[in-house]
Image (cartoon, rainbow, N blue to C red):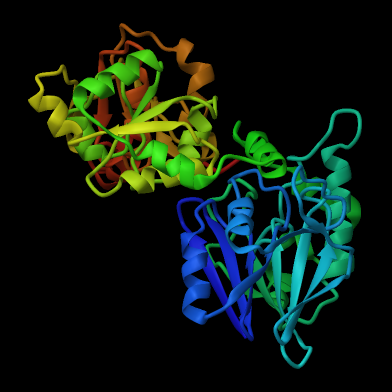
Length: 469
């Protein structure tokens, strides 16, 4: 028996590969199929099942393409009703894979069709539990994503989750390995561990939601407290996973078309495309295409696209470092943005050499900011409100990037703004969006709040420590 976790840090998502006697299973695969096909080829195996724990909201699964290419059967737990051929397993049903078995445990709560998969080894011993978004390390799946107006509430789902954990998962042995669907950084929970695997016994001891003396009412209250609104692309991704989508191979071919400067400009105008610059924040600040938006590939690229671009069908053109073009298209497709239509051949250098207009973002160091700051300085802290509440520069205004599409109108385009986040990635995204909307007097603080804290002897009066709300 072979068990392998395939963890993707950009999405904080874990897919899984199980192989026994030439038969393999993939659990919750990402959109691109090549990594899984390579694994089975190396093992001389054949994929028998693609197991889906639920209709994912935070990414588009690769279940359809993988099934088409391999003949594998897509499997969901009870109550799932996908718009394509799939096997809907019964609660407690056992699937045979080589010399091992996988038992389907229906665990509604995160969603109604949510299921976990219990792997038993060759001797029939419970070995590992693939929990999807039902149980994380340190947390449980948020129960507010699948509510239906007039039919089911988040309190209902939280109650179902309480029952699922107590009746299906907690009775299992402490040495069972827990393989969750996500780790820290995912918006599917609120306090996930940085670890990506652990044991059930450890979770019974440390996970707030698995306290043995916890009442149903206490569970519902604690699980629902502190949840922020889910990103706007979540329900759209869930619908794609349920209804079907375009083959990633076609998306990749369309998105990786190399366009000359002339063709790029024509597509930008004719398609009313959004231009994303996926280079580093340092390169973007030194020079970029006027009107383009920075979302660097070296950060959490896909989730930020999902948060900031409301239309999944939006035509997208992009710039990237040479060799990163396919990675950009792949990450876009992972969260449902299938309409990338090409990239600028030769990148920014080609644009510059063609004599086209360029723009820059002014930057200052934390030390320079400390020297020139006054009481009238407008400083925007673009971190999350929870980060701001924990610790922030006195006088700074919290202007979270998460909500910029709703709050941009509160700013004055004629005013000068200094911007910072934690380290500089989010502030550069913010600066690019504001610049594209006509804000000309923007200054980014290099290194962000982390750098400002290091200069605290110079800016002591500007750093405030507060108790986290």
